[in-house]
Amino acid sequence: MTLEIAPATIFVFALIFTRLGTMLMLLPAIGEAIIPARARIALAFGMTFVLLPLVRDLFPAVPTGMATLVVLLGGELLIGLFIGGTARLVMSTMQFAGSIIAFQIGLALAQSFDPAQGAQSTLVGSFLSVLGVTLVFSFNLHHLMIMAMRDSYEIFGPGLLPPLGDVTQLVVDTVAGVFRVAMQLSAPFMVFGLVFYFGLGVLTKLMPQVQVFFVAMPANIALGLALLFLLLGTMGLWFAEYFTDATAVFVL
Image (cartoon, rainbow, N blue to C red; front, side, top):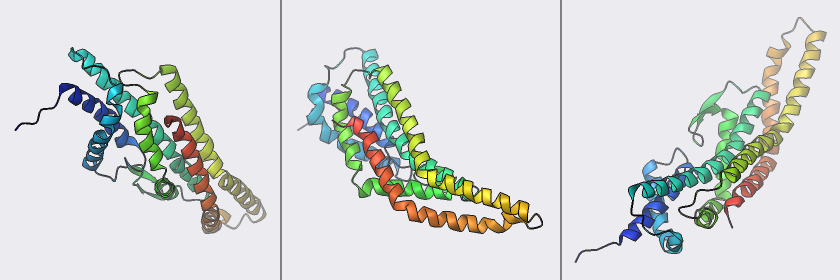
């Protein structure tokens, strides 16, 4: 006995897999660089089987021309890139804030590999990036991203390209939000750095024969790290709230 699959089912499966696969390659926590690509593809394959009976009625009929099929696949790819890229951009808030903090507490030159970003970053930035991924799982925020996979078919119908104006506005708002929240998270350290270096400047004028900046560097790092761990809980909750609000736009 041979198993026959209708061409319409294969067509719908390919479109769903294109969108979900693209999203899973970019989504934070699920699509991190440390997770093998094969595992993400397998997850997208399984999620496609789950979503297939739920959204198949939303898809158009099988196109007769290859050009139409390519356009449909390209549209699904762009939607996946848009949703996954937006979530990834929101996730970079912690890394950006960590880089600002590192400059203020004298750890800007201390670099390490950031598994969440897949590139070199400051120690504080790498730590906060990993903390952000941990918070996503701890607060079950990855459920929002899974829900966005299903609800994206209600927001961006299959075969329909998203409105360019709305997409551009959302990207601009997301970038502005990332900068705003990163600056808010690092604001106490910017104040600390301003006060600390102002005090060092005064001491340098009072005691020009002493290398004040060289002597005070360990104190700068120690006080900065103490302030970081004092505010870590508040920073984590603030980021989790922002991540929830920023990704909720893709959930109905």
